[in-house]
Image (cartoon, rainbow, N blue to C red; front, top):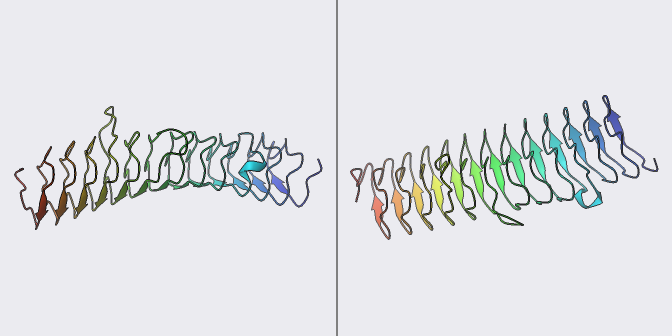
Length: 231
């Protein structure tokens, strides 16, 4: 190897490295296929196990099988078991938590924090700009982009049903919990808009506000449990 200033600890850790510098690779098979990446931190069994190239300089993956398919995606940070483990060329993603951002191959500019946050998101090359913070936040968002979900199961959507909504903002436990194709909705409060599926351009503020509203559009609902029986 012509690389220098590298640290590799563990069976087959960094075994293919030929020219990279200033890398830290720790764990059984960690960075096993990495060749020329620089300034990467790879820690955990089979973490960063893809062919990391110079295009992926600065990659940080920590956890068993975390980021284990990244090849040329730049500026990614993955921390957690099987976190970001399908990503190959997507860039500038941050995922922290077991299974977070676990399906995206080429998505970019996403931030997922929490167990299975944005787990099934995959919208295509460089698509994304989603932010999900909380247990299973945005878990079943499939191709929806530019969404912000903050709170346990906020924007979780429904298993087996493509969730394609864009530009939604939900803050609060279970807020916009079953959103599917609704766009441009803003909800603030625990369970606010938690039944909304296809409605768009709504504003729900307050715990349980619009909590039984399913398909309404262009509604503004403010107050605790306001329109809790639907509109």
